[in-house]
Amino acid sequence: MSSNHLHIGGIDSIELIEKYGTPLFVYDVQKIRENARAFVRTFEESGIPFQVAYASKAFSSVAMLQVAKQEKLSLDVVSQGELHTALEAGFPVEKIHMHGNNKSEDELRMAIECGIGCIVVDNFHEISLLEALVEELDTTVQVLLRVTPGIEAHTHDYILTGQEDSKFGFDLNSNQADKALKRLLNLPRFRVLGIHSHIGSQIFETTGFEMAIKKLFQLLNHWKHQYQYDAEVVNLGGGFGIKYTESDQPLPLNQYVVTLTKCIKAEAQRLGLSIPEIWIEPGRSIVGDAGTTLYTIGSLKEVKNVRKYVSVDGGMTDNIRPALYQAKYQAVVANKINDPLIEEVSIAGKCCESGDMLIWDLKTPAIESGDFLAVFSTGAYGYAMASHYNRFPKAAVVFVENGKDQLVVKREKYTDLTRFDLSYE
Image (cartoon, rainbow, N blue to C red):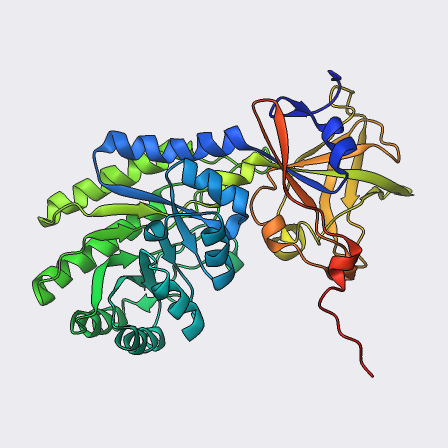
């Protein structure tokens, strides 16, 4: 074990590369647990009933969901595939919540038949589908009503979801939410647990959440007096930011919960409402900074007086976020962790796209072909959004904890790429 190598979870990253190859996603499981417990313990201290549901879209695999189960989290799924993965992982179905703005009849049927804990209803079309299904299956269903409170979080436009102009949820200003509630309350097979909102992603402050809470409690107060309806649950979604680069300054995870619970107690007291059970849906903030991607450095290209390109054996196929969101990352040369930083380079992926750039202007030691690069905070939306563009196989995933490593997702083989291809004659 070299002192000049990056270590992850007590293991030499170069030893992991020698064992599993690159590109390689490595997760520090202890960090996942610490992040989850920061939310859970703070809620426990607040005395408010709660559920912390891991948003599995950030990274879903059988092993990851088993860790979430061990940490006694609930689970947010948005597709049959994510629900299937949860069932394969043995996740308690009563703690699974299903999201989605365009749930199909098949998805809803699967959710109902397996006994899912809650469906977050997103639109009137979905209500009609559910109404027919619960009659056909002679059962009942628990739902939350997703609303768009008109609050804009300070984040990238493509990942805003809570503003008035959104593909998600029932709008408040047009009274869509009222119409949806009235319809659901008149359907005996539906139990309306409460409301849901999600105001965005990668949020570094609590102001947006506090504004959303005030809007939601105004709505709940209106519903109590207008329809004699008391919400049992208020789901505030996720979006809690993490640190990708030195310029990112997120709050400690427990601080989000402290502020949210304080605001909820104040609003409930001010309006004379009972304090509901509070649900949140962290995804990125649980797995994001627990993940590191390891690459092998290949070609080097210097454009005189412009920049030096350093290419790695992955790119937008395992991390689309820089190309999609202009997301920024920090990285180090994993086998020269203590060497002086004497170069400034740009990290290029190997896909046939000029936009396949992982990092611009990274300070590094003297780089050579055959060195290894470690990109930090890739645990969320890396493997989850991976593609087969240019017919690259998907990378392997390794969990490390207590000085031990375990392969949890196998590296794809080239035969996997053509497994579903059919000949044309």
